[in-house]
Image (cartoon, rainbow, N blue to C red; front, side, top):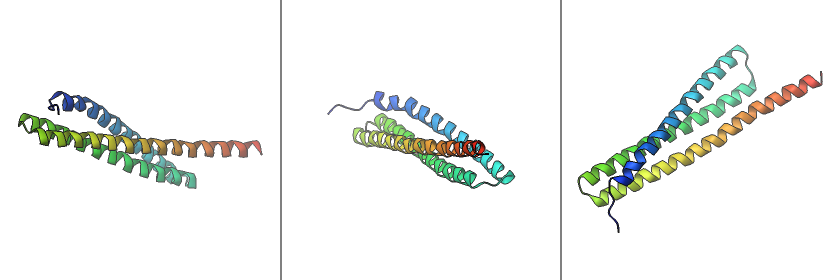
Amino acid sequence: MELLNYNAPGLLFPAISLLMLAYTNRFLGLTSASRGLVLQYRTKPDIRLLRQVESLRERLSLVRHTQAMGVTSLLFCTTCLFALFLDSQLTARFAFAGALLFMMASLVVSLREIYLSVRAINIEFDSLLRDAQADDHR
């Protein structure tokens, strides 16, 4: 079995950092949309807005989980590097495996959030089409 060296966990650092940046941008976009919907609902209550708010709440929760898993992945990656520094191959291997597993888990949860995002925009499209059809019948 080949020894683990600094290169493998070192390659994960930029990947995890980019994922964390993407997750943070996603989070900021969702919070901005949430505030806008809340303001819009307070101005003119509409059941369709409540459906969007429910979707945003679920999506924000998923993004929070992706961020937590990304941070955990980074912690495992750092632990791996520290274990390599201490010449503890077994600990380094377990930590590296943990970093990879948490990174994969964050990607899976992110994929789920993307599917919810598409569902949310479809709510908007359905609303727009219903309004357009109602205007055509007038």
